[in-house]
Image 1 (cartoon, rainbow, N blue to C red):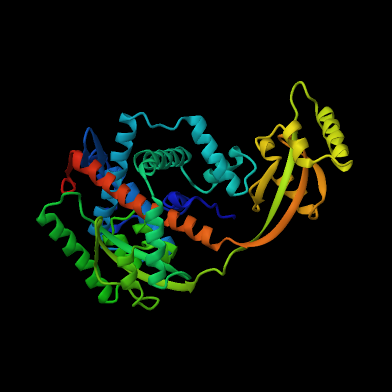
Image 2 (image 1 turned 90 degrees about the vertical axis):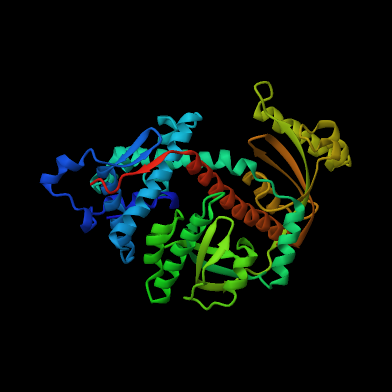
Length: 440
């Protein structure tokens, strides 16, 4: 039976095709169901989370942890962690509803169709049939996907759209990276995050620190990192063992890098402080970065005759052939481009400057690659018919440009996560949340 792959954000969903397992502490006997089905374990503004909903999520989480081979945290600890995540999800859903952020069925079907295609299913119907045969509740699957899309849109709207990264930040980031000798190193990391609420009282900060210290004590005693992460971490990836995957050195805050450089693979840091809370990082692996990136660039110019309802493909091709004949006869390419080309480059004599791979549509790039320096050729693309001339070629090291772009992405990733955690804390601070876990 083929295994269906889901996006990272949907990791919890992938376990739905496995047998449901229960945390022993909360196994519900048949005679208990009537008493527990309507029990409320948390009030979140005007909504509630029931014992039945919490138990169902616990079963899913336990199944996921077992599937990953992660030792289970203590029952009460795992229950609290799962409930906190459910509260965070509900708060985001409420905010989305209040602000008109929604995903209709058409958009949802498009998203699920993409997932089906990624898993090599030719149609949405066949994909859904496969899910049902694997024991997945299709209705619940659809709503989980919808919630993930809404969460992503909220993050884009409330966080990503407000990110500003200056050239000075990029310069400073690269300078610090170079000073620390991090140009070619990449790190496979896992982490534990204990969040400190914004404007937290001294008591709350102390409680968060004590919780982080407890996690560190368990790690020092030989406990499995993924188990401790599942039991203590507030990060969204906690139930995946806190795995952050591979990260370049410039995607890791300098304060953390100072600690990581003293570690060997398999070791973890002490408790570290950041604006978002307390962290413990584990260095899983370390490797050297990539070699300099050298690409072949082509300096080219072109003349474009567009096709339209008035100008057919045959007419456009004929007109371009006449222009080519004039150039072959001694007319200047730039002069003909300025007079006839229907592209924005016409005033520059059709000059496109230096082109890198992937910068133009495939048909255009393919035609350029077949031409020798000085040669002309014709090609049809979605824009019309082109007469192309290759002026020169060069091999260029674009490592510096890539470094700057990667630095910008890395800065954005770090700032985005900080802003996102701030936004979640603000959302929580404004909410009314009442715990009723003891009422079982």
